[in-house]
Image 1 (cartoon, helix red, strand yellow):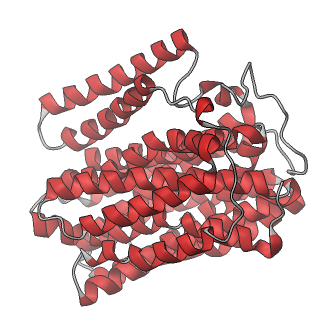
Image 2 (cartoon, one colour):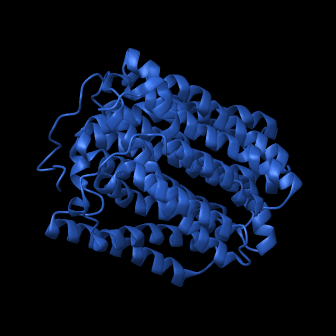
Length: 462
């Protein structure tokens, strides 16, 4: 195991993780502008959001396995180059379908970066420092989410939405330069790479089905709704059948037989569902219902993301000192109070007062991120870090995809006050479920290496 010399390794690797949240939150500010330019409704812009999320979610398990086989640094560099190319192409998209397609390719690129950044830390940071270093990684990721609305608002004030994609260029160059300074690692080899195309297609069908159902329910397209349900059911059946017969899939379900891993993966999905749905819904609410411009919208979203950044810097260290459970409980409680508060407050109080509740959502997610990741990854063998990280990262996007589908199904066109009340009430229910996952986890402090055998006959060669 390499030593993290003064955090330089963590800084270099964590910087690559910033692209996913930066590109998501930055685009959120521009959604009303993009909707107006291409003359599309809320359902269409949620498809623009969901196509990116689906690509990241489906491809992250495969991206993690590629890192195990070829080396995590090599796959991260490849992902950065691809992200740069597709981001620049997105800036010149001439129509909405083309922009959707290019956003999907951006998601595939991010899927090569994110799980391998976490896996590299898992393999190269001392176990006793893993939670704190993952906390720093989470803070950098949160910084990307925090800067996204601010940068997006500033760019929209002086230019147009294509500028939001071109801004990736200088950051990608810096990230590549820092990764070149890290020691080259050798993966397990091509022969160990197992990416099952059937199960990958089943996951794509599953996520696409959820998105189509959400986008079509409120626009009176029963045929599209039926097609979405069919894709969802087909994806579920095909994946289970393939896994039962072949004993493998792009997501290894045996990982979830581990209580700590399964509980934290579910909690991560639920927490991200609450946060990401709020991230997408709030700009639409503030613009359509309250009449605020991009500047105020960017400030409101910045409050949520900034709180997540600040808290993430300390949550990992606190978990190292007092154990993961108290930090997980505090984060889950904050998320529940914030979601419940928004359900009561939207349409009833001045928009400026909602900023505090958005900050509380950021605080909750900042507390949850590092201990959730550390507990999950420390419960499986180090040699499976890429596969476990890819599947864990996918679960975050499971929450995001379900959340955007839920948003499209409830809000429909412009979205009324009653619809926003309902949306946040449902998010509060998901926050309760997240709290339950925290209560069942067994882990305390992370001080030892993971066991050398995962639940069932799961080994690095599987």
